[in-house]
Image 1 (spheres, rainbow, N blue to C red):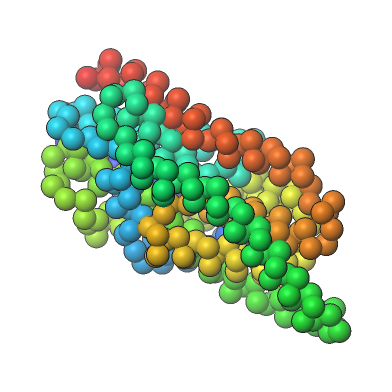
Image 2 (image 1 turned 135 degrees about the vertical axis):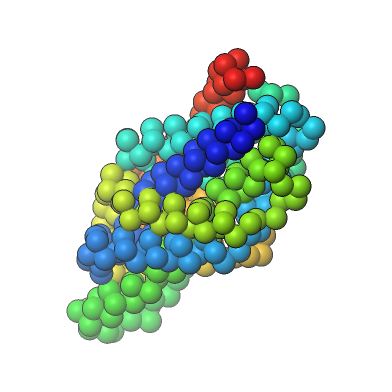
Length: 333
């Protein structure tokens, strides 16, 4: 039973990784596509490639997810695997719901919320201090940092190029956006693919197939391939929300938003090993550059709907995952 459950959990985890790819593809390429710096297909191919590269660059976030959120402890192997499976299903369900409505919610917070919900439902240890320090605080700070840095950097660029030819500036920033979109895709792979790696390792440890939380090479490669395939599949609904509904972007603002978001993703991944939301980071950066036009240029109603999805993600995914645990435990346990 344990072997079969591990196979099922790994399959569902890679399925989550795939949904993460098409759900969050917009994070990396919406601004470049909306400003016509890249064609949609070229942007998707580039994002898929750099997502894969980013997925292979580190393991700090994977270790946070694999051992830092919940402690399965001495539970029987099949019970631990049921818990991980329920968490992955909870995260997938919330991803699909928000994708259907075109809302750029956080796949990261969906997974973390789902793990927390399963921990509460099953009565195991939930590491609230880790959740506070590496999830809640970064969740609150990263949008503020993204908004503030993007606003300030955009103001600086507007001053620097205040006397330049607008057509030449637009053309140059459209070319520069190719690099900033690649940097954003790399950061997305670095952050989000690692979360799936952590879940797979958590399943291997729960099933007794691995003693440590070290990430095997096959786990890294499979997670990288899954998120890249999902990214290539595209996320057109969410792309329209980020690329056009929040604000009409020009190449300079798109470049600044992507560059700021990528720098925040790298810093939190390499320095703090904090699994932050790529969605929140790029969305807040887009709002930051948009606010340099005028505050009314940002469609705050759309931004408010996005914020509601952010707030609901952790409790909603936790609820679905807890319900799935009760059902699966009754059927399999």
